[in-house]
Length: 128
Image 1: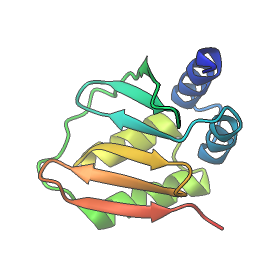
Image 2 (image 1 turned 120 degrees about the horizontal axis):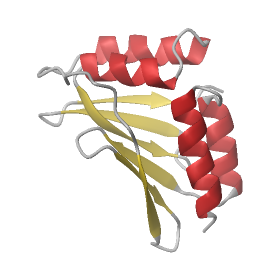
Image 3 (image 1 turned 90 degrees about the vertical axis):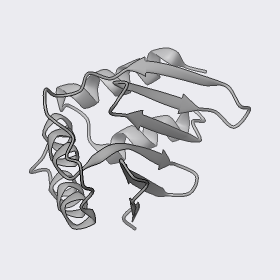
């Protein structure tokens, strides 16, 4: 597992100097199957197909996670990130305002599942 690459992707994401598609391509080339960003714990866990994993600290913005999950607000945050209006730090704030507590990016499944406090979820498929 190339932990230096995982660290680079995490660091550059938080600096807003790499896009989601670029992160996915780098992680895919390194064999990463999926990763989970936990807003509560402030960490990202990367999973390999052989069951190994690696955790990177993930600084969270000083923002409150909304009590109620809004799939429409989450979708709006995703569209903002896809269009380049929101860089990753701003996306995190918008996701937290939408009530998101974390998300799983299933690279092999080509989707991201955003979750709320009560198990509500919104799935976004990778753009074609």
